[in-house]
Structures are given as structure tokens and as C-alpha cells.
Length: 212
Image 1 (tube, rainbow, N blue to C red):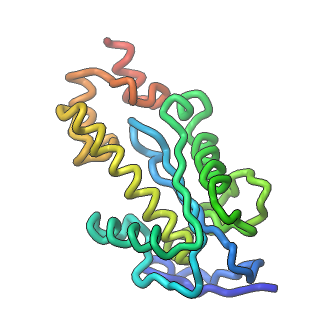
Image 2 (image 1 turned 135 degrees about the vertical axis):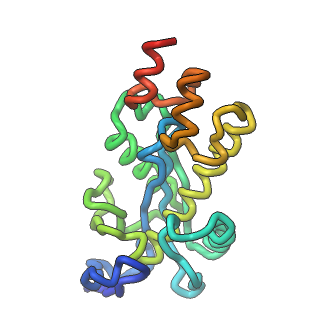
């Protein structure tokens, strides 16, 4: 049996309706945050929403303000049937590469769901290699609320980690740029050198390691 979900949010209107090959209640949306930063883990979340307790305003986390994301994250944790947040560390990113580390974080989040998921909707164009069947959904965080909820939880969790790292190393500006390779971050890398939390396989970090 198939279910349909309409396109949601800016940029999703050009996409066809999402046809889902599952009609039960244990459908998990899965998304990740943190492929591009030079520091810290890649974070993934999996969410099974409760059809009886809908959450208004779920959208791609990148399209929301930090305050709105944090408010929605609280609602997701209170109303979802299940949710989990997991990560793959910077060390694992270096060992596996960012693609495989992202899928590792996703599998960890899926495995942590209680009750377990019966079907997955994964943002992007590839499934993470989990034994639970599912489908990859391009621009999924704008097309299905469960994926949007996962993107919000992952983003809020990773941003909190960057704020904590900023408290330990305030000269790098992590609370502002969240580890992305901004001009401020690259200048701090050049001036201060990489931290243990930096991803050593990423070009800007690798180049600075050669100098220190």
C-alpha cells in the first residue's frame, strides 16, 4: 500500500508529490547535519512522528531561525513516538571519509529508536545501508515532516556541541560559524592551529597541520 505526501516548503513546489511505499505508523524520517564543517562530529537524527499528535511548522532546519528550531525540537521530543540523535566523531570522519561517517551516524540513530522503525525516509539520494527498508528522498527535509523533524533535532544538537566547544576555545568563534570554513574560522586556524576536534582529513586543517 502506498501513501502520498505533498511537497512542502520553498523549493519543494517544483518536485513531484512524494509517494511512500509504506502506510503504517512506524515510519522514521532520517537526516544529518555537519558534512561541511572542519571540526566536530557529523550528527544524525531519526524521528517517528505520532500521527495523533501533529506538530505545526516543521520545515527544513536551515530555513528556520535558531529560536524556532529550538522550540520545535522541544515539541518533537515531547510528541514523537520515538526519536534518537547519534553522531560519528571527527576521528571517524577522518578514518572513514565524510560520506561513510554520515551513514554510520544515520545507522546509529536508526538503531537507537524505541520502538524500532519499520520504514525509513532518508534525506538525500542514498540510503545508509541499514537493514530496515526505505527510500531516499531528495530535498526530503522540505517534503516530509518526519525528515524535517530529524533535520531540526540534528541541527540543534550539533549547534549545541559547537557552543560547548566555543566555551572551551573561545578564540576560534565556534558559536558563530558552527565549525564551517568561514573567513573567521580559517583565520583562527592559521593563527592558532588545529584543535584535537578538527577533522584532519579536510584540506584547510591538513594544510595547517603541515605548518605546526
